Image (tube, rainbow, N blue to C red; front, top):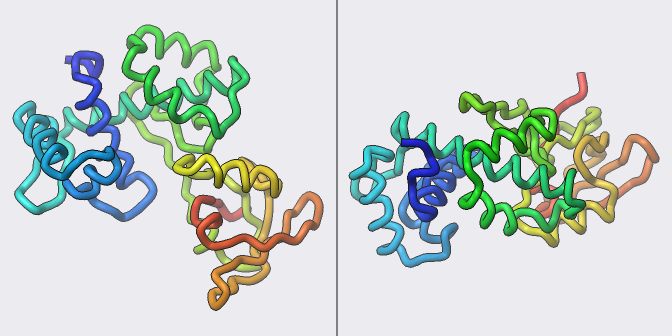
Length: 225
């Protein structure tokens, strides 16, 4: 069975389980799924039981939820769909990067596997979406960069922005107005932990910025060799 043969709800749960641990050392639980899916814990528990009956997850009561090989393949396929659609909406239809997440959440369930592969080809087989999240290959291979959160980046080292979380559109818009987008080069002058702020410098212009830690937590960077 391909991922298209699953219900939209099952597709969403599998994708959420997989993305939970993509950028953080965090395990999926029923409570976490309920929070992220906006449902009651009992509803999330029932969904997990159905996925387990289909051989897509393994879950012990009150424990973490693990994807089986089949579940992982389906989850990665949905992640690939979502991120290719986001990229298509930005590059081909002129959407802003802060507008595409909800649209992709709808379209990813309606698109066929053939359409997704044609979108991929039309875009030239991109390796990341508009927010820097890696787009898995057609064979399911993920390509996460070796990156750290800006809050955890070393001071006085040249850095490149490689990912900005799309969890909050307001944060995307705020960072964009500051000039912090994908591939922006910058450095951290000071981690002001006592104030919950970072002092940054944009490499191209020398502009100094003060960024709150909540916004900085959404930014991932790599150190420029």
